[in-house]
Structure formats: structure tokens, C-alpha cells
Amino acid sequence: MTTVDNQEPECKVGLEEKWLEAHREQLKHSELPEQLWTTLAEKVVHRIYDAGNYIEFHRVDSPLKRCQFQVVALNSLEEADDLFLVNHIWNFSSVAEAHTHLHDENIKGLSSRIAQIFDLDFEAADSQCSGKIEAEIIDNLVHFAFPHVIRSGSETLQEIYSVYDELGSRLQFAENKDDPKLNCKFISIFDVMQQRFISVIFTTRRIEAHEELKRLPAARIEHFQAQKSYWTDRFDTEGQCEWLASYSTLKPLIEESRKCEREDAQVIILGCGNSTLGFDMHKDGYPNISSVDFAENVIDQMKVKHGTGSGGLSWHVADLRALPETEFPCSKFHFAIDKGTLDSMLALGKQGWINPNVNFEDLEDETWVKAISAAQKYLKEVHRILLPTVGVFFLVSLGSPEFRVPLLEKCNLEVQQIKLLEPQRQDREDDEAKLKLKWNGQYHNKHIYICTTAKPQ
Ligand SMILES: C[S@@+](CC[C@H](N)C(=O)[O-])C[C@H]1O[C@@H](n2cnc3c(N)ncnc32)[C@H](O)[C@@H]1O
Image 1 (cartoon, rainbow, N blue to C red):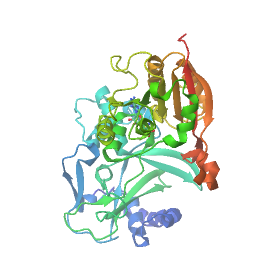
Image 2: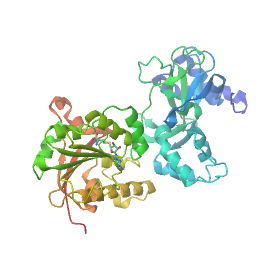
Image 3: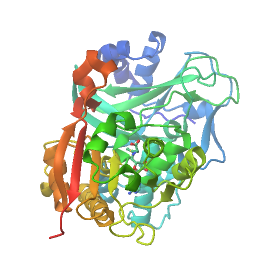
Image 4: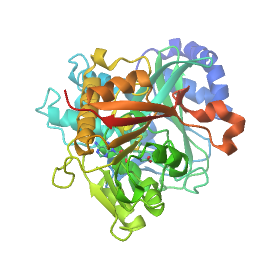
């Protein structure tokens, strides 16, 4: 199967050269071997999508949507001998924009095309995108949408997300760069003539007939952290990740803000993930630690890894926005610790979750309203389970005070202190950078908000 568009070829000969000229600098910085540049120009100008002549898709069993197909060579392919174009089917710049596109009648057939790529059941009768299919599409973006940055020199002009055609979406990832299964590269180029991204797959070694094509893992979209599937998928493969700071860094501040004896403290870790914080605190003399996360798989893993520590360590699957009262009664805890969890709930939109200039009262975007309302539900639950007067909410966050303080105070959590995390000794040579976390090209401070409970107004 080859698709070629049918405009007059003679006009396009010159176009190929022009295209090559316009993209020479980008190509020099790409990893595409020079011997393939003219083939690329020819395929782009003539829009030749001919991968179907060389590969096929095999359906395989996998719990992960993105892994239910393999891209397999029909016959052997030589190293850097040919390339295949990958179409970017859908580009959007935020989850909110993705929702808007799905409802836009001018973008005909988008939902059915995307449902096809994501392998979702889409009823042909559904000419409009139904709520259910829309929710499934949005939920699956975490597996199928990839970030691209449009730059001018070193300046980032725009970040967009793309969903590729079947070839790009079904091409699986090798483990790492040393994986012997790695056999092709995936690169993206911004086509300055047509003002769109195009992606290209080319072989990096000989591929045998019937062998699966595999590329290096791509960057993940952190902006989708607000969704549970992002986390369960991540915990399927991630061993341990300590967000923002370890217990040894936080320990002095926890000691300072604690309002009861260590032995008496009922501690809750909110959104524990696979961090060792709860376990480390328990070892350090806190007998009662409850850890909560909505990702069932990570709670199962943590139970196996750390056990119950003579009964004092307990592990709970629950959504922090609606904690069951039987398991989490009112006024139970002395200490509630959040390390990166509130941030992840606010990571639905673009940059706003840590952008100091965003005023949450002014947010009109529908996705933002959802994120803020989720965060408020959560913080009200924190208030409910903390003991009045002695209860402390200890929040470790990248969010700046301009943004976090009004949100906390709206939920009756009174901010007593805000601390900036100190760099550790071995990081001294790069103090400025270590005080802050680099995200989206900018450094952001790591803050600790120490809050007590106020009476609800
Ligand atoms: C950025 S990670 C931080 C993990 C851990 N606290 C650490 O410091 O490494 C955010 C965690 O919050 C959890 N989470 C996010 N939203 C949640 C919710 N609504 N209910 C329960 N857990 C949630 C995620 O599953 C994830 O484990």
C-alpha cells in the first residue's frame, strides 16, 4: 500500500530541492543519515506514505493499550536504506484544546479516526463525539500523544502534542539504547513550508524479515499526571522514584513542625507512590504511618516491599478527593504529608500548575476549573482528617506561594510557614540549579508549606 498525492510531478522536482534547502540546517542537527535526505525531500513533497509495502501490524495481548500491536518487517530491511513517513494526525497544545477539537464540527471525523488509532470501540452511528468516547480518548492521550517543541534558535516558541498515525502509534519502544532489539530511529522535523511537523522512521541496523521494529523510548507527557492511568501505567515499570526530596532532607523540617511526640503521631502520606518516605519515617521512630494512593498496583507493590512494620505501617487504595470516612475518620491525624501529589492533581493544563503568574480565581478554561475543583476537594478532605489545632499539613510542592497560598486558605488550611528547600552539601557547585527544579526550560523553586487547620467559615 502506497499513498501518493497526485499534483503535477514536474512542478515538484524544483520543490524537492527547495524543500531540502529550507531544511538543511534542521537535517544537519537531526540524526537522519545524509544519504537519506533526498529520499526524505521526495517523500515529503510527494506525500509518499509507503510503509505499508514494507511492514505490517501484528495484534498481541497486552494490558496496555499502546502495546497491543507490533510493527513487523515483511522482508528484511537494510541499515539506513530507506525511510518511512509518519503522519501527525492530531496536534493540540493542552488537554482543554483536545476537548475543544473533539467537539469541533469543522474537524470532521477526528474522534472516529483517533478511536481507530487507539483501538477503541467507536460506534459509526456516533457522528458526534459522545461523552464516553471523549473520556476514553482523553484518558488514552497519556499513552499516545507525544510532545514536540517549536523553537526559534534557543527560544521555545510553542509546545504541542501530537498523535501519530497507526505506524507512529504502534511502533513500540526498546528498553534503552543498549537493548539489542533497538533497530530504528524516530525523528521529527518541523516542515517550515507547510508549517507542520512530520516524523520519520529509518532503520539503524539490518532488520530481518518478520522482526519487530523498535525505537528508543520517547519523552512522556507529564501534563497528564492528573489522570490515574498515567500513574498505574508508570508504576507498572517504575521501581522507585522519590519526588522533590527524600526523608533525610525533610527530617529537620518535619521535626520542627511536629506538634506532638513522635511516638504519639498518627501520620498519613497522601499519594505515596513508590517513595520510601513512609517506610523511612517508620524506621526513624514514627510507629503509625498510613500511606494512601489511588493506584492499586503501587499499593500492592509497597505492601510486598515494605510490609506492615509490626502493624504500624498501613497501605490504602483510595482517591484522596473522596476518602471513605470509615477508613479515614474526621480529626484522626497529627501529620499529613503531601510530596508532589497536589502538584500532580493540578497538572491537567499547560504550565499553570507551577506558573506563579496564574491566578486561580481567573481561570476560565474548563480543564483548569476541573483541576482546581479536584484540588479543592482533596484539600477539604485533608482538613477533615486532621486534628483541629495540633494537626499539621506538610506540603512539598513546586507551586509558587502566589498560586498555592490562596488555594490552601480557601480550603481552611492556614499557611504558617513557607520554606525553600536547601541544596544538599554535595550539590554545592550548582547551588542555584539544585534549589530549583528545571521544568519546561525554566527553573522552579521547591517549596515547603507548613499549614494548620482553621475553622471552616
Ligand atoms: C508526583 S507523585 C508523588 C509520589 C510520592 N509522594 C513521592 O514523593 O515520590 C504523585 C502521586 O500522587 C498519586 N495521586 C495523584 N492523584 C491522586 C488521587 N486523586 N488520589 C490518590 N492518589 C493520587 C499518584 O498516584 C502518585 O503516586
